Length: 399
Image (cartoon, rainbow, N blue to C red):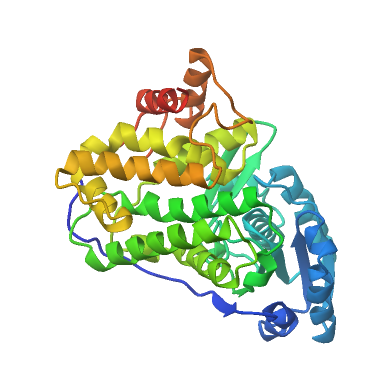
């Protein structure tokens, strides 16, 4: 059994946050203050072009006297092949600062570009496949357009190798951006589906820390529970009206706090649901948030009886469940969470996820084999799950 006392920890969150309206106009000055001279700007689809945001950002770089190069086309579940090409362009340009204008996929790609540019003799997948360690990188700045991944303050970055259909995360302090510009108005144009995916991802970054065997960790628990209540309340508003500044502000700030480490300090992390979801994103190219909501209920149902009191605490403090019996309270908390995902129009099973659909038993076995890295690893810590456990969870999600 894991030691149940609060663990020692190191909290390192060096990212300068610039939050509020019109803040995107400060991008140039902020980059210049960090000794930037040649800025490599990474963005996704056409929305930042159509909205005029990219022009605003590049104008601020010009005004600060900085050279820049722009590269667009990042897709959700960011691709290794795109990042590799961007690294080549960045090295040719002589980049000394990378600026992400977008959401999690753009930021993750920018982190890869920074590592690749600073290590021109190393293929970036060497870092993601843990064959090499990042020992130097370039600074990354962010102009955030989507509240979800928390990548603007996190130490992690995820890439998908589309040749092998493998999705991998890399955690290193070199992934923490130098600054993050956060203007909630930049999220107004998001489609409802992306808002829903973002809310799920934000909740999951905290839930994957909250479900732990660690006890006597009161302040971290209170921070996590408060964040979850705030996201649940404001998410219900934002999903109906993405132009509600107050709701979008709360969600945007929660996104950063949910993945900068603060909602899990002193506790052993679980992150099984993220690993279950990564396999789905890699195989079916389903949006990250939707992959998480599709499996969370199955995972929770499978593991809660390891420690019903933890799920009961969650149900009572986050969902105001009044049931005195821990097992019944735990079940009600799980039901309320799944119902909330449904309220956001997020899938809560394979069948509800159009990219996945119902799977044969053989297909489910193959997915479990992939998620367990062909039977070579376990996932999670609340309940350590091997390939067979993963298969059982996927089976529940496949009903």
